[in-house]
Image: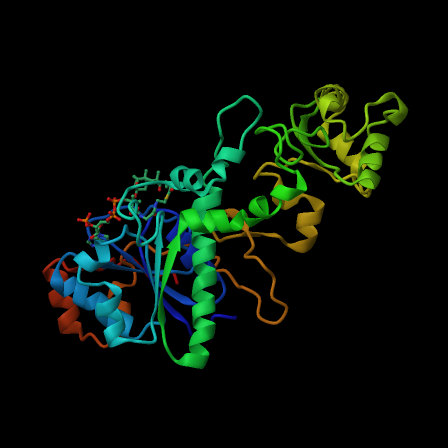
Length: 382
Ligand SMILES: C[C@H](CCC[C@H](C)C(=O)SCCNC(=O)CCNC(=O)[C@H](O)C(C)(C)COP(=O)(O)OP(=O)(O)OC[C@H]1O[C@@H](n2cnc3c(N)ncnc32)[C@H](O)[C@@H]1OP(=O)(O)O)[C@H]1CC[C@H]2[C@@H]3[C@H](O)C[C@@H]4C[C@H](O)CC[C@]4(C)[C@H]3C[C@H](O)[C@]12C
């Protein structure tokens, strides 16, 4: 796999850092998640393929263990707000001193500087600060965050993973590590670059929810079907729009022009009424194999069995029978091979990992009895 041989330490976080760690693990890196002591359950649902070490970083001996793990690692991912790592004596200066080749990846909402750097926040706040939230939502409704996808994952975990891969690539030439400052505000904004760059195209001239791609246009919308499901329509170009009209069995000479903004509400009404007359399966049958850009809106339960996704093996099933997306993208020679046996138990690999980093049995026992580390003796599943 592409990242085979890369060793990553991921300090346990909420959602973005676990995603970043999962991507690296899926593509072959060895990822060790550092969990807190006295945690009975993990909030990490993106933990497949990772190992878990329980370490009390607030104790100097615990911080010393992390430092030692970092000496033989390639990447550290830390998801705390600015200043937390420095307070623990684990800031970049301390850690990179002992391993200048380390990639020290910081994944926060507001970044490492600026007046919000130390403020708490969640995805919705970062998307709001990126400018994107102001553009999301239907006409006459409040802005609406698309789950926690934009900042936590697209602008956060994924952008951070890209930064790590770039830094690893650069290290081949320079032999040096570096610090990555991933701000989810900036990551989300960057993902949205098209919105800034396309302003002169007139795509966003109207108010929220009245533009072509923000649910304003009838040909870029979802429609409810007779069985309470939905179809997604993305027929922008005239030749594709024509196919849409044909599939709906409408007469274009009786309809307003596609690009007549003032007629969009009326056109939407007609499409709504038409789509409501057949089931999703019936519409799929009509539109499959055409260029009308009409697809069913599939639920998470339905995606893996859709013929197209099934043919490509786009979803995987783990040992527990859970379905999830196959890692993307597909690399032709060295594709990702996600671990199907699930995530680790908290502290499942503490003693194993410490032994691998040169700790003797006695040292491990001492750290355990003083509560600096915790070992879960349940049989290893990795
Ligand atoms: C699914 C829910 C997640 C939703 C995602 C949400 C929408 C997001 O947007 S996630 C993105 C959040 N933002 C960031 O990550 C940006 C950077 N980070 C931060 O800004 C902050 O970390 C923070 C604001 C997110 C949290 O602030 P906090 O004050 O808590 O933390 P920090 O200031 O960063 O400091 C950390 C302190 O911890 C110490 N530390 C860390 N590691 C160790 C260690 N190993 N040993 C000792 N100490 C350690 C560190 O030193 C700091 O100490 P100080 O403060 O003293 O300096 C999920 C959201 C909630 C989940 C549920 C919940 O957790 C309860 C259950 C838990 C159970 O295990 C699983 C089920 C739960 C119901 C769980 C379910 C889901 O996961 C959630 C609902």
